[in-house]
Image (cartoon, rainbow, N blue to C red; front, side, top):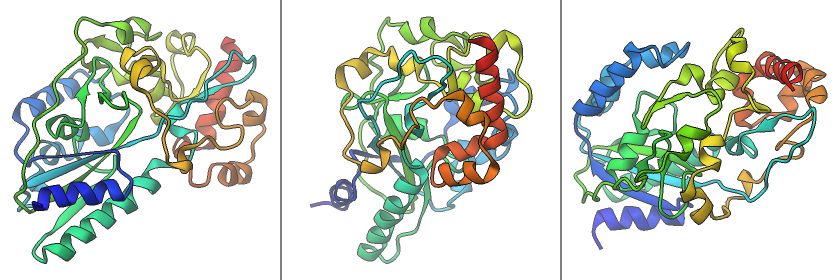
Length: 308
């Protein structure tokens, strides 16, 4: 068995549903698209997107002797659904359970440690949505899935309900074929977006995206956007919910940590408004929802109460 196949076998044993490997090389075309995206201001107030662009375009700026990118995916879908509850706010599916960073990152370190145990000269860097890495580009190149018109990675096996992670590695490996685009003529995600954040196929204006506005953006939000929040308190799944690939291939995860925490699918807005800082820290310890902080969550709840 080749080292590449051994790595894939071990990754599955560690709990990843998909793994692919691609060559570490400069992302010239993707880099140009990123620069155009930034020039349009589509990053909104995410100032960190303006930094380290050279690392995003060339991983040798992160690991000088990088040869390969190992891309992994973990299914997080659970079959629970939102309802039409009044005075309650919808939470994005990815944040129902424990923080995915805390689940994927240790497993990727275990995989890297195993690679080092087999190849003493091996060296690598682990990333789970935490550094200047264009993870969706590498996932597509490694065959995990293609970037849909909503800009999420879609896999044939699990739809787009997957978390991604990478290992930048200094070993030459066997590389997988890139994933092909299977969106065809479908525009359901574009048509369904209530704030028209998908400006054209494969281009997202994050400054209009409900997920960005309710999670990443700090401060006030324009009423022209909040009137279309459609009951979303934290994040938004609309473009994924309408995707035919998710209807056909979503499969319940076997990772128990991704099961919803109590009252974390659609909490009552009044309860959110009455949360103390101490309550917030206790309730959302180990949850991705701590990212928006209590002030952001209360702001979102206030917006929903005013627009419902």
